[in-house]
Length: 385
Ligand SMILES: Cc1cc2nc3c(=O)[nH]c(=O)nc-3n(C[C@H](O)[C@H](O)[C@H](O)COP(=O)(O)OP(=O)(O)OC[C@H]3O[C@@H](n4cnc5c(N)ncnc54)[C@H](O)[C@@H]3O)c2cc1C
Image (cartoon, rainbow, N blue to C red; front, side, top):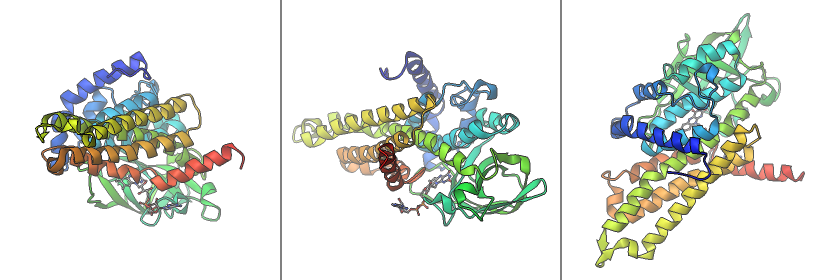
């Protein structure tokens, strides 16, 4: 694939990465899916090859290429194993982004660098049993006692939760003010006493990923594990969400590849009424529509990533890219399954997996409804009305 909107260097990177994934990851994709295998060893293999590092600066073992290259990794790995990229991305980008932007030099060396090498796994802990879209309603508390914080509460739907070594954990440090001014971010080692995994959620798709409910009972962590300033965690949270949403949009572009290719191939091979079904517009127009939304999704995602790498605010662009790409990926899988007919409903083809896997991303990382709310808010704000 040689895309004019990516640089020559980026296109070369994509080609090399695709070769690596085809050789090292693709042979395990069925095993991950069918046996619900968490691919920690393969995440490490990607770390050894330097592919976990693109989003981060060289000081911590990264290659400093930024979000525009990270979206290539998201797309390429998600096209082969959505669940594996979910685990990889939660570790390197969701845990990694706030660490990179707000952690101290010592914290980055101690906690970020091993995650970039794939030796340790990271996660981000925002959502709770009673708190989803309304993140400001967070109940998990962190109380300062001497040179420690004592943490109590629960988190739900945490990707990598049961596997993570470190969690970028959000908790309320000042309950007397609005959570925007009373929330803090912490570096939480899961080896801490009082931490437990309530359960790994049993899900519609993303077999191989681990998404967990977690409990924190009088967990004591050193005060120096604060990320950024006390009570300034809401800013850390908001900053992380823009890069997360762009990365998810890129994953969604990746989810389109297998269903689209299976549908195109099938439409040329399947004969009905004495001709390949691609000669019926009811089929070939679906192929045209799929190809068009995939292109549009990739460009919206690249725009958000390029703006992020230039240091621009991308709340609106990241939300647009995520809504469009995630809805497109579900639509592509849905149309492809229709083209495949009864065969599409069987597990002989992978389209059914991508239909289930892609459904998640209209929920995780900000629901489609919340993102529409954000976009309209930005539009009116830009106009001062
Ligand atoms: C597989 C998976 C992995 C996840 N990984 C992580 C993770 O790693 N870390 C983490 O912190 N979280 C994670 N999440 C949580 C995810 O971000 C939340 O599920 C999501 O933000 C929505 O919250 P909720 O599920 O509680 O739904 P709710 O917020 O309860 O929403 C329910 C419905 O109401 C709608 N709704 C709510 N408020 C409004 C409103 N104001 N206007 C219009 N509609 C509204 C929503 O759009 C939705 O349709 C994950 C979730 C899943 C399913």
